[in-house]
Length: 136
Image (cartoon, rainbow, N blue to C red; front, side, top):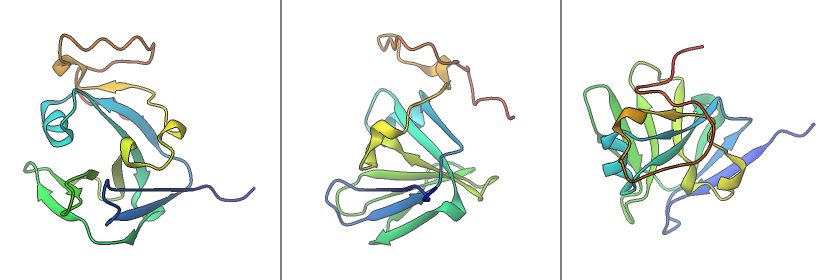
């Protein structure tokens, strides 16, 4: 079977990336930091191995959004692209909305659901966690 290649990039096209293989997980994040960084009521993330991710074009800008994590985005158009915890440098979280085929990355859980905006009601039946999902 041929290896799956998935590509994505920012709104203006200055920064492009490629993911090989399947994601380790896909989730909706309801935390206030993701909402602010994404300018949206919820952000969908695809968790991928850092070894399966490559920048193809351009260089993203980094922003230290907390003591524990960094976010990468396009410095030209501002599109949020990647989130990375310091504690897990082997894993990157990629914004599903920046993928060329976001429909291929279906969220399987909600994290930080306790922070959900009360007017946002999603009718899926995937698990919801008040904070981050349990390991395992």
